[in-house]
Structures are given as C-alpha cells and as structure tokens.
Figure 1 (cartoon, rainbow, N blue to C red):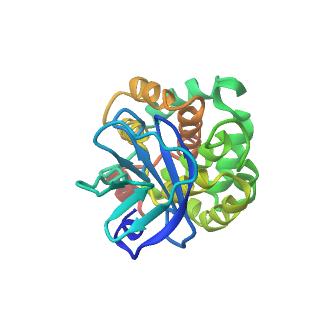
Figure 2 (figure 1 turned 135 degrees about the vertical axis):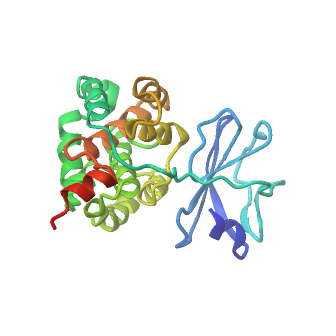
Figure 3 (figure 1 turned 120 degrees about the vertical axis):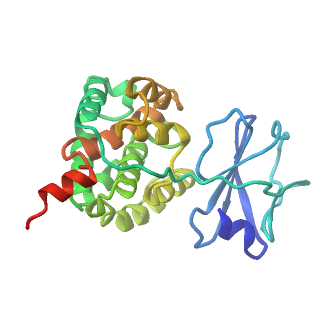
Length: 260
C-alpha cells in the first residue's frame, strides 16, 4: 500500500462501506489499487488499514483521497502509525504427511463448503503450477462471495507458489491478473495481485507455516476455514492443491538429491 499512501494525492471512489470494512478504489497502476479500512476485529487483509476503533458511518458518495501519507473518506482522515508485513517469512520445506492430512479434509468437502467444484479447482491449480493460465482464468469470478470462491482458490495457489519457490506457477500470474481486471470484482482482483506477491491474511500464513512443520495443521486449517463463508476454505484448497503433488523439499534433501 505504500505507493498509494506515500505518493502524490489522487482521488478515488467508494466501493462499499459497512461496520466491518470500507473499500476504496483508485484508478492507478499501483498494486494493489484497492484499500480497505478495517476495525481491529476484522480479518487483516494484506491491503487493509486497521483503524484504532470502530469505523465511522459512511453514507452517500463521499470524496475519497489518498496520498502524501494519508487516506481520507469524506471528513474522516487516517494516517498510518505502524506498518505490518503481510508476507510470511521463514517458510522452508513442506511436510508430506501434513499436506496429506490437510488434503484428506479438503478433498472430502462438498461444493457448497468450498464454493466451487473441488476436482475442477484442483485440476486448474495443477495447470497453474505447471505454468498454464487458462484453467485458472476460467475459475475467476466463479462461486459465491465478495471475493468469489474461484478467485480464492487461485489466490491460494499463487501465494503458495510465491512463498515456496514454485516459479513455474508464477509464470501464469501476469495473464491471470490481467484477466482478473475483467472477470471479477475490483477487490478480488486487488487481492489476487497481493497473493502473487506472497501477501496473505494471517490465518493463511499460520496454515502455511503448519504445513512447513511450524504449528498444528488441524487448528490452523480450522482457523483459515473460519474466514468468510467460503473464502478461507477455498484459499486452503488452492494452497494444498499447489503443494500436495510435489511437496517442497528441505534444503538438505535438495543437496542430497543434486547430481554430482
């Protein structure tokens, strides 16, 4: 969010406002182009500004301005006091047994629980990891939610690829992000750009760490699945589908397997 907040002043528009989030959009090439104002109790989105208290009531079509260190919506102005990094650090080797345990739970879920057909989602993610964008693009905008479930599956796969060295998966990212500008909501397109940079909600970060043997898989998967109606579950499907077929080996294993 730094380019928007620290850059020159520019106007935007209100996407939506409620007691749990205020979303504003800017016509800019900055990534992300959407910012979210969030109370402390909301899920900490990677493009979110967490305010000190409750959000003010916002009605009508207020003026939205960002830049020179602040964001204003109508008469209310917010200035960042602290910054957080939404990209988890220190993720190394995934544990095959932990991935298998998570997969057993996720692959057994119904379409209503995930938001899209799980088999279709898995096939699209496997193509994405191989560098093919078309099946993942077909998922964009599919399913329920402010961020459609199909988008969340793709976001999970992009984030896993970015954070755990699946460089072939990131080859598909430019086409996916371009298609997202036409195929889904502004908020979801912005969150996909965050995912491609390895930026995720804390619940996804904890689940990824557990897959790398840092934390409990069952509890962190449950925590991620509690995010939204289907968003967290679909994110988990994308993450596990991107990693389960070929778990990321440890540095020691890679060294042993390297040819002389």
